[in-house]
Length: 172
Image (cartoon, rainbow, N blue to C red; front, top):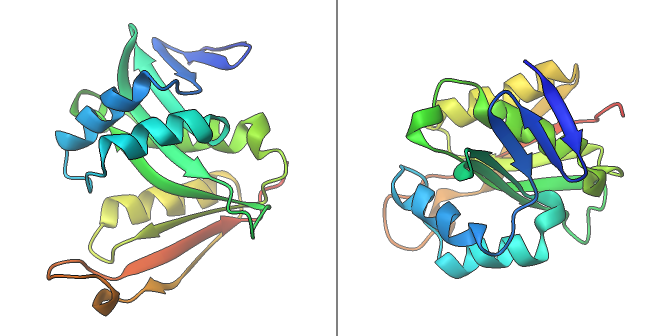
């Protein structure tokens, strides 16, 4: 696997990893709409690209968006990047793209002061649980799991509790 860095864009094999632009927001929304992920408003994806580009990553193949991670640094936790969503196009599943996106995020200059990565995951989402545990192993650090939002906090029926996965500290 060959990696080349050119400013804010890195190229690995035929994929490029870069900061998103507002034009990427609609493609992120479409990718989620065609997946099993929770679909947020199109505004959310455009907003993340505009205001949190330093902590978001898009992966493109031949100019087409095939994956992304949306994340931000909470004001009260400046040493932590919170991953809101990781999306991977069905054409890329099973190729390790989600792991590559998270590693790209952690290495971003926008995360220079980050020591921890956090994300919430439902108890039944074994794939995401494995993804975050693998990130901890890759960086030779810990992954602590705790309850974040109880099931009864969510309106309506059918939303599971959300568990916090806290990975770190990262040794940079």
